[in-house]
Length: 334
Image 1 (spheres, rainbow, N blue to C red):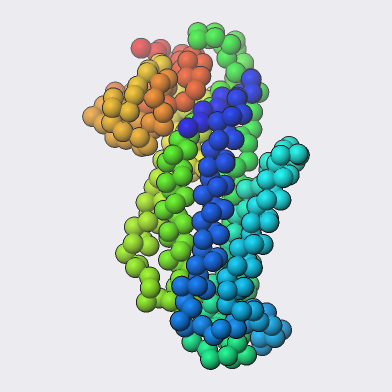
Image 2 (image 1 turned 120 degrees about the vertical axis):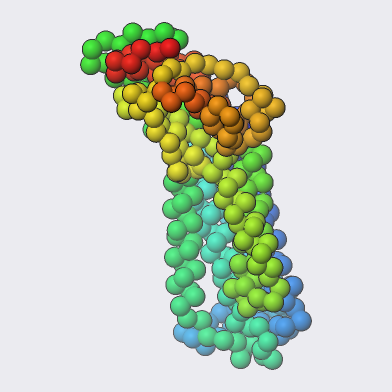
């Protein structure tokens, strides 16, 4: 789990690295398994020598089946090892590129492997492999999109211009302050990644022409479960002149916004999983919560009498600024 106060003092790096390593490890191992398994599980429907290179639409190069299964996996592991080396010796420049490169390369190699299997499926010789066409463009577009999404999901949050200096704030006329914080649960993210990989495995089997091996009900359930877990596994919280803004998931979407006029008061609470009703996004009798770790939480009471609870670090400062903004809006806290 990770909590990071994004305004003012830098947050500790260790939880961030721990979460990133878990995610990268799951992704690297999962893609490796897919690259090797796709051709080997279709061995009985593939020729001993499979086409692996095309000139135009005609195959002009081949590899033994085992080599075709292992070669992309070796390339993938070399890319991962190169990134690990770069992060070890040049962590600054490599940190921003690691996730996009891993995402784009993993999608590119997996898509290419699925296309190779599909082209060779049920062919007596590799020379009879189906031509490559629009799937090459689709794979390249998918890889580029994966890289962009990974960059958006992992880029650092922009720092606010300032943050309040104590639990009780007195804002001067025209003074503008911003408080930012983050929280995430890396176990939920790892489970979401595993479910996503299972979904990807089913889709790649279908792309490789092995639709009879795909349990579509499981693919849909795992896909929806991965999406739900991912959206509930992290939050980005911002308190500013416009009130409270809470973004869910790695992209900060969907989001919830409460203007100062909608807020009665804010305070700090301490909760554990039993008191919160479980992990992730929860609905309880008195309101809703986003619970990602036990301990300090920001508790916002709305004018409708419901509570919105978010487990984030440095919640006392966020509550103090919210209360000051409510007072400035002409709605005394209570």
